[in-house]
Image (cartoon, rainbow, N blue to C red; front, side):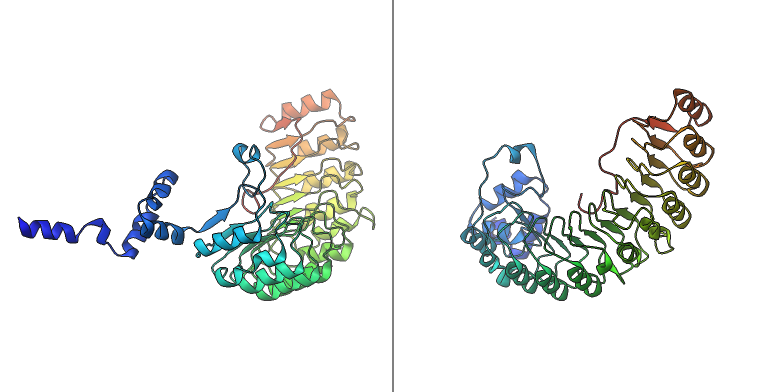
Length: 390
């Protein structure tokens, strides 16, 4: 009996080595159980801390929830971040989004504990400048995802990011109004694994910075940018785009510039959002319809210049199209709807509301001949895949 008692004491959980306790902690799939683990003793708390892989604060809006929205905002300062990064030394994902008062020097601690970081979110960190971004880039060279929404960075910071973080796959630069095509050029030429980029509302971009981008780039959002024809060509130059959102772009060059999308380099495109491209012409629609044979969803809501010829080209050439958005298109008439009815054999959903030139008879005939197509009057505000940035 004494021997049995001695063996039991030797196999007590208290005597398990740290690597076994780490393994046990990883198997805890309940958040309350994980929190209770760290309350056992100082040793188990240390294991809990070292096992943490992600961190975001209450003021962060990387993942919105009703509970977080109801909380009083709490700004994270340098000393908070210092203590937390010292405690959680093996983070792979860090969200500082919403930390509006965090200065550049607040990121100094990343020099010691940022080598494992793969995702960094700095959305609305208004006090972070090129200095802070450069510090983060040199400290977190394994970054795969970075979000800089509304950050006050310039081409200098973006270039330092591109030269240090060569493994970047997802980059959000929306509302970074101080960047130009020069910064984009550094990003596209240095980061050969880029998969998804957001540059929406970056008014200083024409798109030429994307010229020669990697074929791995499959997702691009460039809403309300001042794109030029050469910029459009640059955006699709990689040849791998599957999702493109250029809704609301300022077409100072007229309605034919978007035709470059169908120039041959976007043959893999599956989802295209041209909503609010009010001057896009029939010639551009024809070029895109012929040059993007895999197109499955196309948003042309509020594209007022698309006429009968444009709708006919869609009906004739868009053989893979499943979803089409034509809400409030002023020049979509009965003849245009007839062209869509006779073509687009794979069409499943037609979003059509506010098209004043379409008669009720034309709609009823469409329903009669294409009973498999669902007509919806709702106007979808966001289309696209569920992967990047969602």
